[in-house]
Structures are given as C-alpha cells and as structure tokens.
Image 1 (tube, rainbow, N blue to C red):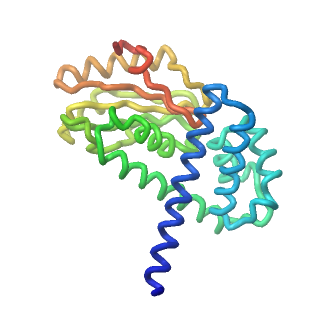
Image 2: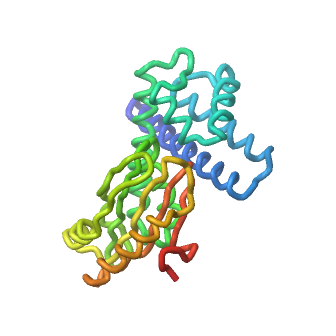
Length: 248
C-alpha cells in the first residue's frame, strides 16, 4: 500500500472520530433533556472521554476517572468542560499547549464540516445539521453573541454572519444592520441565533421583543424571519418550534 493511500486513510479516520465526538455530545444533550437512563448516559460519557483522549493523544484508561470527576463538577456539560480546559481553569497531567492546540484545531475542523453539511440542503429541513453546526459555532463563547443564517428562496444557506457581541448576559441588536446584511447577500429568509452563556435555554422578555422588531424590519423588505434559535449548554431552543416571539 502506498504512503499516499495510508495518509488518506488516516485523515478519513480522524474526520470520523471528530464526527463521532460531536455526535456523542449532541446525543448526551438530548439524553439529559429527555431524562434518559443513567446507564445510557454513562455509556455516552465514556465514549466521549475516549474520543477526547484520542484527540489529545492520551490513554483513556489513565484519564477516565479524572475527566469524569471534572465533568460531574460541570453537571455533565461538555461545552463548559471544554471552556474550562482551554482557559486553564482545569487541567490534565501531561496535556500542554500543543495538545490543546491540536484539540482546538480538531474542533475547528468539525465546525467547518458541519457548515459544509448544512450547506447541502434546506436549513429548515436539515434541523439536526443546523443544530449541530450552531452548537459548534457557539462553543466556548463566554459572552453573548448574536448571529444570523441567511437563506435563499430554497431555504439553502448563503452565509452565517456574527453580527453583534455583548456582555455575559446581553448583546445590543440593531435590526437595520441585520436587514442591510440580508440585502447585501440577496437573502430571502433569516434565522436569528444567539447564545446564553449562563446555560439557560428559555428566551427572555428582551429576546421576545427583539424577535418581533426583527420580524417587522425584515418584513418591510419582503424578507422572512424564519426562526430565532437560542444555544446554551450544548442544546438549542427554537422559538418557531415553541410558538414564542410571534411565531405560529
């Protein structure tokens, strides 16, 4: 077998590991929300630890207990665990900056893969792919960030733009700038997205008000506000799905 084909197989295996890692994280979030069995959640957790250790070049058997304790302190929230690991609030023996940079690069590639997958079909139909991408896009954010997915008439992704960044619990949003970005891209629809660093999924009164203002501003230009999604704690909340903010 040629060196080129061996390298190709290694790249494919690495990409598969990254997909499996994020699939595990998303499945755990769903399990917590649905009250899944402790045994099932534990299995997913161990799988996640194994994949993290692979990305860091560690032996899972030597680090499982320590990572499990750290995760328990984070209430099982992988996103919070990653943020604390990168910020230096927690650590793992033998894991230095090089290993953390390798893990960060892997997560960045996973986000790119998710964006590429999202661009292959209608965003509102590919809800799982959309949620997958958004959770990765907002990973590790310690301040509130407001972004928009701009879609064409077929509800296919034209672009994802970060528009406003704020404090720990709020971000000023200007509908005219969202409208200007949508016009510049020739968008027919917009999905607004922001994160709650606090981990709370439910929309605030301010979230509901800005949703209505955005809808009114975009409607004047014949552009539809299709949804407003909140990302927090490795999960996402669709206002359109829940009938919040004037969605029916």
